[in-house]
Length: 269
Image (cartoon, rainbow, N blue to C red):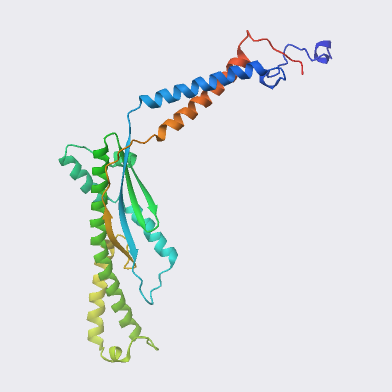
């Protein structure tokens, strides 16, 4: 083994300057790089155009139905489903058509970029971001109104579907050995009526089911609240840019300290 390795001074050995106990001055250099990066990130954020966020709200409430096999999990899933219906084709197409008449050409891809959905208990919040506050408020309000109208129409179909299912199940129940339906109702049925009525109810069920959009009578869409025009822009990107600049400065500072040949290496502990 050669003497240079025994002494710890082999030219291939390298000790990070930042890990040396005498590296206080190089940490100052790294700190300066971090501050410079953070300042640069802040300046970049100031150069970006302001972005405003408007929020519109669609409210729902529970319609408690006795003897209905509806659990809290099912209701929770249905409220989440309303958030999914925000981007239903019927809603998006009408929103795009409205904005086209105003000279604002939207696409589904653009709406997904500027729009977002947030659930607040029983409410669904539609958030829209734009560089112009009045445009953000207009799109969010129209979006909520269109969704409310579409959900209201779907709820009417859900009521018809629920009624048809109840009648169908009542007739089928009378065909069992121990019916739960009232005796007067079951005794009034005859074979011809049962056949005709079940055919009619099945037709209603098949035709109404696609129109409900997956809603049930247990969840009623009560109202929508238009968005107010935002007064202050968001600064959601400023913090991220400052943090990113500081991290970039940290990386550049470490690279400068470790790779700069003008800084003397110090291997002593």
